[in-house]
Length: 403
Image (tube, rainbow, N blue to C red):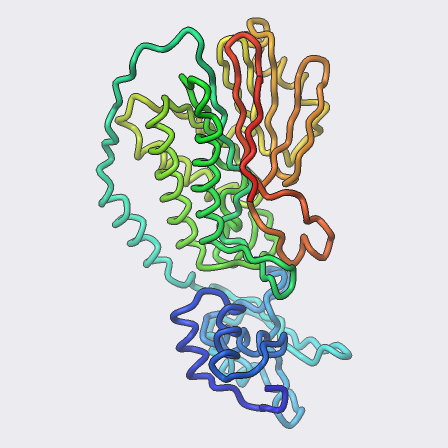
């Protein structure tokens, strides 16, 4: 393929309709052509796929989107109209542009657009409405047997799932995508339930949010605008997150009543909130589940002598959480003997006591993508965790389902 100057664009576009992610398309293309997969193939396949889309090439807003070369085959530079025609960019939406040339990086146009339509926005709207319309919206209320005197709280916390994250074993040594993310949540929760089966569970605290989704915009960026390598379209990943939450909560409701708390987070501050609100609406007629889905950064839950705080953990210092808890949960602070804060964000385990409050960070089931591998933020165990709390003696067991 290194000697091949032209690519079969028809085959690439055909594969792009069937396969999500330019990396996977490039691998399939290399296999179909019976050649070795290389980074050069990936880049060219990505370029061809990108040329079919309305693309904003402003480097200050896309932060990492591949640059589209302005060089012709003969080495001369395209003018702006040729550039737009070549890459199917709407010339009438170009507000301003600047030709950028750097030694070793070729040439490209930095374009500011007046407006670029969001691909498949109407499809997303239709899909989510159709999906909600097919739901009964009446999950059955279960009549429980009388609670046992010796029973426990189960905390289930699938932290930092990042549905939509893309990790490629070719680069980082492991694969991670939306399908793997959903599979791990389902398997992890089931594993926690099996390991907790020796305890009589009378209440479940399910901690949601915490970067359940990997991006927050159609341009594949976090809420703050940091570009991410992604698997699948943003709206498909949103629908997958909705479905796995419903599947998991239905399973937990078979065991005990559930309290759902939502922790807003830095990757999906907006879409994560919308997702939690949809889940709350779906269960609005079920008396076995309660919700705390406000946009507050910290949530508190009391179980007999236990006071449990939860937060994503991307703001403030862990050492300040105990005093923050004392101020924000004054009434329950005085009534409880065992106090905990479960936080997330850093994808690895820490646990420390601060004057009677145990602050614990949780592991993540998500794989390490290109950035994490480059920065050496990887090789922490991939896991979903849970905790058993006694009514009178606090946390008596940690449960870890490792992948």
